[in-house]
Image (tube, rainbow, N blue to C red; front, side):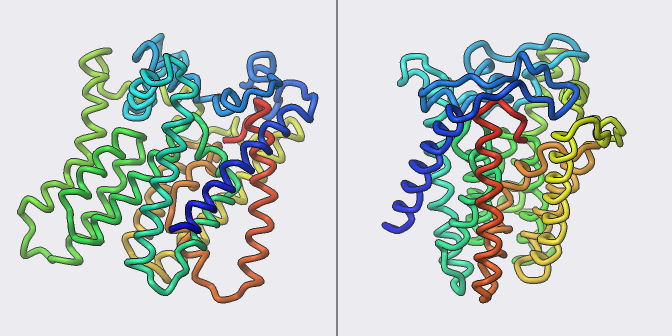
Length: 366
């Protein structure tokens, strides 16, 4: 446990010092990675404040919900109604302790839940994967290319904690607790509902169809209820149960093929697409081996999350979406070949540096 705390502390201090230095070292123009980015709106804002660098891009929507609640402009405009409520609710609650400083509150929330996620992951590995050094998957998680999002004003750390905890209680056959944490995950982001699938698999694997109707399996249905409750709120407040999907298309996620996302007009676009394609190929290969080397429920969780992400008609943000798929890091820790692990770590750290530099300088990083 002391080593876990030390690893987290070193990572947290090092990556944030690096982020501040990266922000102030480069004098950069606005991002031109995609045609929909307005370089004057998303541009570098240098400064020595270690708090504000954690609020970029989607962070503004979470902070807006925490301050002003949900609002809907029009189906053709970017509205905050596509962002699930639990994370901004926690920001608002913590902001009471930070005297209304919502960015600081969001950073605190993300940091706390990142540490809790590491604790639960450590516990899960020790109990259910005793052949693996539990610090190794944690190390691979913290050096993942998009790991800076884990301490940014994004839902990644909260969702990571909730999803790992859901699996942990599921493996212990405490399905009531698994359902409760799954419900909270479903109130954090759209892919939270996917946790329903591996939980049903684990339940049937443990009890079969003989105990198909009891309070344990009924509690698993709390997970889709979380997602449906958010959609029902849209119906009551804005008159459209499917409003989420209509507004989501404004972010280029129309759940159909969009050729505009595969046009290469600039060098940054080529690089972004190339990196996203590498993430996709990596995730697909890893998904295969998760099914083969780990539990089927891990594979179902990974595969369905990838299916949802890839069904949106774009590869954008795929590196961030797979960041929370913790079975990846358990799998990467299994090989005995140190050269493989060292090579992976080298590439991952280099990409982590790149994505951190992009994020803090107002560039698109997922």
